[in-house]
Length: 151
Image (cartoon, rainbow, N blue to C red; front, side, top):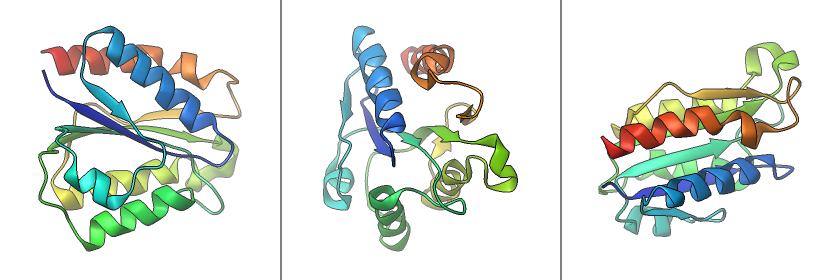
């Protein structure tokens, strides 16, 4: 079974809650998973994981949150030689922001394309203006991801 690494970008902690929920669900199914909410470029580049799950909010005018923004730019500027070939994205946003809704997730999708990472399933977009329990709203999507990882 494939090893998964989860990284997150958050401003208020909601993305971390979703990432922790995903980690727990994957572990419960026997999937080798590691979540580090403060992962550095060096740690991620040295990871033996084959799948990268990114859970991110969108901040400001459609940007990635601080540390994740730095990490994504480092990965784009210095593509690592790693085992990660597949990925998945959970994007959190607020639909009332129109064109920038889940723009952080879209930036991660662009990074995936640049690094040759194939998305296992379509990006999940969670609307903060429509839900107060994104970690629960993500469950069906995470269950589908688990099925794909176990296939």
